[in-house]
Amino acid sequence: MNIDDLVLSRAQKGDPGALDAILRHHYDAIRAVCHRIVINSADAEDATQMALISVARALPSFDRRASLSTWIYRIATNAALDELRRISRRPIPTEDSALEHTQPDATGEVDARILITHALGRVATEYRVVLVLRHVADLDYEEIASVLDIPVGTVRSRLARGRAQLSEIVGNQFPSPTRHNSADDALPPKDGRP
Image (cartoon, rainbow, N blue to C red):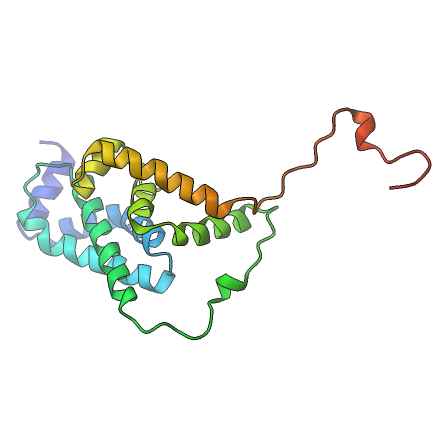
């Protein structure tokens, strides 16, 4: 029995220190999944907390048919989807969020991340979940299929459709660099005209 199995066994038997170790170890992954699926920070934090509570409550009955991390990703994904359902039942605010008014300067990495996060929020939920599990959680297709309880072929098609939607949403948000055929093309004309 390795150290991880020992900690898991102790946590399943009610050892609070072992449970804390498991939750701390998986916190960043849970938070990343919730933030990318839910998008809004405050709501994503709520989803993260609900996922952590769900892991703590369900850990004694974890049957080890899947790996612990796959099981935890499933809980985090479900918590994020539950939060999206709660959000959809809220009254719609009359003011647009500050992010809606932001026009990112596409020259910086931070601006690109803001743009992608905003665009990801506009991708259909079923596709966004698969994109997040693949590109944020770095799960392979079989693990995603296990987390979502769908066939691998469905994972592949949702991933392709999600990437297409994301690409369409982002579109030409990033200006393409000016191309020059030769070094002389990059220089201004000798007579001073632009």
